[in-house]
Image (cartoon, rainbow, N blue to C red; front, side, top):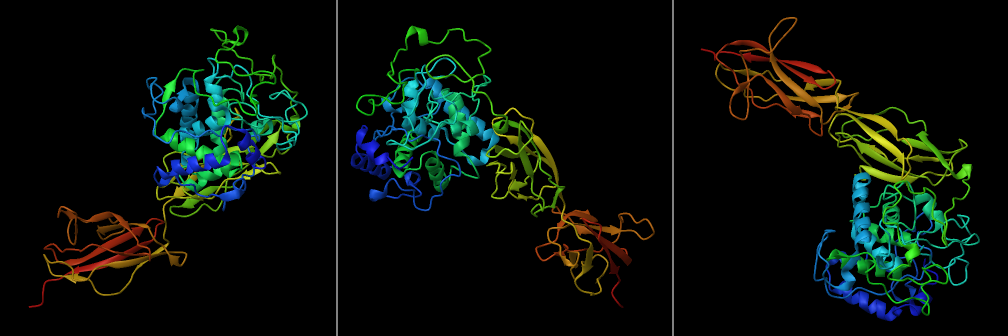
Length: 555
């Protein structure tokens, strides 16, 4: 958070001036992708970036004295992204094995649930580097949990923000004020909304790198952000900690990691010198990080297959604050969504709406809900996304963006789930119908005649309408038919030619244009004279029958 950054930076490993020069040099050595979408610049470095919009949620990072060291200005000498890379390359490009695996696992998870966000794992690595030095150099156990809680400073308004306790000290050991917790530095109240179970152990622990990395990824992807777009990426980072200095530092590590990384063993990662006069405020009070944890704090080589679902209490032991039924999510339900149907190419008139309820049955606000389109369809949410995550409002409801039908007809499903919660999804069936016309007619009344064995001089043009309006993109079938009450395809008389020049008397791949009109291909006559009939039928059932005369030339 921005208010005290300048003071913290001067106390840290480098000065504002040195950091700014180094970042400028780094940016100058890279391509256009390294340019910030917005930059306050100058003395106003702590102000919001020009044109940026702060997140509706409080920042995830708790005003912690984040690391301000910058990456080397040269590329890593062992580029790559595999978690099986050899232990080689510059020290700064090395990322501890479990930490690297957590970032990549989070990227894969977001690719499945919110592909439109396009979260790169290198962004998580950049934030993890700045927030905690990659979990203090990867000092985590076999499950990815830090050996001791990583805590930011007490947020008591003295040099940092004022945030009163929101978790009864369950995560940060402080029942008076909050402290940011874990390798990704979540404030407890933010963790309550965005916390995830990234390693599948049944817990949401901010001190577990898998849980924290997935939570950070979902937080960065909030709303309709596309992190492949520079402006959206900047907004996401600023929502994490609203400071331009922070944004520039994260951006520098992001660009550095994109050029190459390698895996190093857990516990051997590079950690900057302690901050604030030799005391690392990210550790428990009175302790400092150690490359080798005491024997009593090392993980059991055979972890309990049924881990305690309660969050770890900083300082030892485990506890779980008494849940507040009014703040506990009980269910997500349909909030009165009507029939979902649209014609191909049109927007759905109805929008999907869900309601989050607490354990007492009342509305629950700030619940993130992910809407995902599933099935064989090219329908997308407004903006081209197949998955979006939005939070419920004060009345407990949230409405998905407008659905825009594609050209593929048929049924598909939209699922709404409480993000990161093991609650049943709410499923909605939606249908895209073909474009229709209720009337079709010729655009002129010219007689259509041809001599035996010749082609018809005049073309056939028709126009389709629906309820009096132009009907564009409507499928039309043209068939040469027999006479009688039950006409079928005629085997003689006028005909069309396919792409290979073969005779065909039915055409199906026809559609009206933007103005509702359709001009048929050339029509040819065989050697049999007489009056024949051409029938055109639209999707929607509109029909017109046109006469074709094959006459011998006058003597």
